[in-house]
Length: 360
Image 1 (cartoon, rainbow, N blue to C red):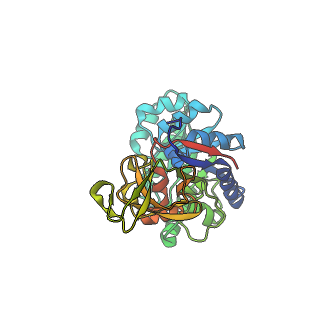
Image 2 (image 1 turned 90 degrees about the horizontal axis):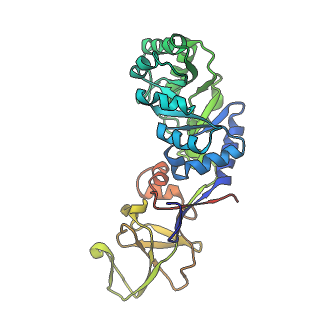
């Protein structure tokens, strides 16, 4: 939804996204940062985020799906795009026609790409311990590498990469993966234009300990978030805001919402907010808080599909911003409340919530 018909929106601070990019770029210099804008830029709006960063000199971006890359290509013909997830062989031509670099991570892709008759740029992914995507054994890696490097003049082997699974939580396992990637890089003995391994956590904490990488991939921390302790320089980029649509004055003993799960302990004022679980603010947020005028107010009753209830006082008006997260109540606080991670919180806000972009 592009137009706003209710006072509910996600406020995106583009300037803070750029400042997060610049901060990490300075930290890992001379390597370059590849902003990861998959999953609609982690809920921030991939087209707007990409175009804004491009206007400020950033020209290389990564996504997970070919359809994400095609959407960005439709809006910008000058950026470089890498699809990090698996691309089906029948879609290689679409990638080629749109100048999109794909990832080769399995032998099914290798068997097809060996016979292509159109140009395509590829990055080769190796599995160093994540056990998700990528070539794993030495034999498998060398076989895929030799085909990509030598067999088909239409194929440009541009990059090599892996993915760390524990950079934020298990240094010993991280070190094993890093050592394995170093071993693979030396085994291949090839002048790749791009070699990248670090995600946000690894970029900030460990990237400078690797002497053979050329780039890092900045995902969640581009958007001011991290799973690590003590990272203070990142700036918040996301606020979820609504306004009170109606007031209800309850008498002591009256109940609110589906299941009548909340009972007024005294005469109380309730604010009805036009946002609910169909917007991605799920029912499990019941009993959490919202922020109004720099104070916390309690969510009461069950969160509905399209509305929810907040216990307020007589000072609150319909003009006041109600901030569900991204202010006094951080995205991390909401993640802890829901027993998950901050990635999931911002990604689960649905298309029904329009975005408003700020640059201050």
